Length: 356
Ligand code: DP6
Image (cartoon, rainbow, N blue to C red; front, side, top):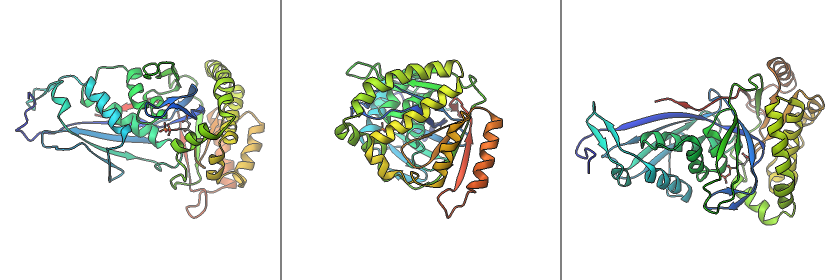
């Protein structure tokens, strides 16, 4: 093999990928293995300073297995989703050469060489803040850099999708649409950027971290249950979402906040009502903050949505309105680590960062 197998070298890449918040939700799969959705979805990608995954990936002849550490703890890579991503990336890898270090890895070497992955989330994992979206997008993005995969972001999004559906949207900043696609092999189920992070840059996103505990029901099993048991989900996927997608694209293009807010709130409520499992996990349902938020919704200043957990995502149409909202939130619901609400995270839209 061309890689200098006798030598003790390590080649690394580090990347940062932000999470994304869906405003028209992905809820339900038509293929569980390839992760193909039953409807298109649209999201906003957040800035990485507050909610992002940082991943370092390394390759070395000294590594004898693929291994991964998440937030300091080793996790198994044996799951089908990780394996699908690794297989896809290895099959697209190209030659890598670093003359200074005397390293040469050929396309063929990648089939046998092992990688180590160290990933860290700067926000609660599996608490409904789309940690899998940022995590899998970052894993695919950083490994693609390491392995010199030359595919564009859209092709990479189809790989990230196989790690976690919502991850495909985190490969882009700004406003992103995941096209469900029609092909059985999923080749056309990809993410595309609707508008970059500079478009509508006065939108501000505030996340009320009501709970950093892991969700009782994962999105994966919640949506599986919904598809298997709900009579409404087909109507949502075929009738409701296609219309909302068109309207949402229009609202984003025209920076029409009242329409954007109405659609965002309607879609989160729609998923909530359809998904009984979610209602069980939805501890936020009866509390005061939610009632207050409903009164905020009366004025088209704030949109709200939930990503499969109790944490509320509030989207404000400009900084002034966001400051006022935050002032009110802090007054009525001061963060308290012992109570339900423990912090607020504020973010803007952004694009992923190549940190190495
Ligand atoms: C409510 O992408 O976490 O956040 O594809 O099974 O990994 P899997 O599910 P995941 O589900 C996200 C669901 C959601 C809505 C959304 O992000 O569109």
